[in-house]
Image (cartoon, rainbow, N blue to C red; front, side):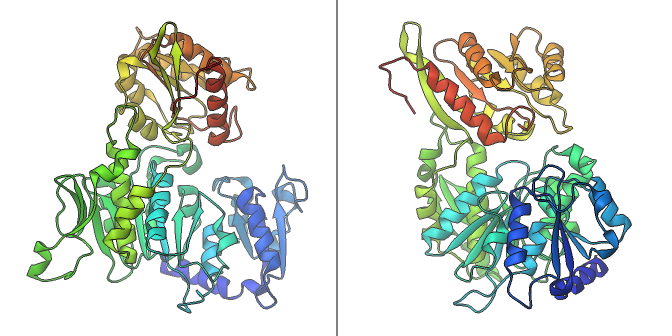
Length: 502
């Protein structure tokens, strides 16, 4: 690892003399091209070219056209897996491959007040990343800091990294982005959880987990994990962290030293209170917030989900690792509003002659894997739930989720081009549950079909939830597009004169 890091560090020093190829002109790829070509003299690469078979304006449409002997560095799109022919060609020619994240780390500038690069707080996990980083950013804002929320959410980090006014960067990092990241040194980092996902991209679950674990590498102050998560603990033990970095756990139980947890409805910190050593350490705790401060994040039943509490503790741990005051955690938690497409209450629509017990529609299009979908479904009364599921499985198997959830449902509506295996899984594990298929051929109207089918299957008082447990690329532009279509067709169900009930 040290030899590999030295090689990339040497390349970073000579970036201004390098011929750079940007592989993929999606959102991050185009941002990389723009930033590299706008760098001032002395930092500007010798040349910047691009490779993309689909994008107009790319210099090359095929890896066979690339003059590999003249390329010094490839910046890879996070959507391109390591086995992509262009990246294997780079490996064959001994050309290093960087992520946008690695490039951004190399291009940092000093903060205008501290005269040092702004620290990074980095988050990864199979589920809960976006909620955690947005909550973390809200807490940091509450402490008066100027924050850039970047990475897999918000703007590409490469567009923000040259801004000298940013006090702290909050990064949501996917396993794709971490795979080609080598020298990043977060102030604090966290793995929320690891469950099977993106096996098709990584080749195996072990490689997926290994790439997630790269976030701990070179962390300076705190590596945050969930107490009892044995897999993450093993990965943390194997991580090459900076000397002095601490392992900090979060738990919904009473916290031990070096952890954050809950005591009598109070979120407490026993990790970042003074003194950090000696006997007094065992008698100190800081009160961060009350569970009642999370009431506005409760589910349809009025109960704050366990995953919401855990995400809050992770955000608090990272904020405290940075050094924010306890009051900022409380103020940030109380003011936080989650983003769209994550357990979003769309409407309660009156059905038949039961206006007081209509059908509630929930948009959780961001539940793109089984782990996320399970968390949402278990917060609902399953016997009165209609589940809209399906899309691109990314190589994951939904059998265990369907075996656990399926038999308890009111009904299921399956979407997506890979619907056959999901339907077969219901037949194996929940044969008595009505399962409907929304036409996979009509990609333009599939969500209309799904919503209308779910509406017919639901009884007054039921919940219809879009929690696909799959990616969206087969029939939609993104999970946001999928969620927007769900909201669109649910809104069409609201009869004239009835206000949309959030």
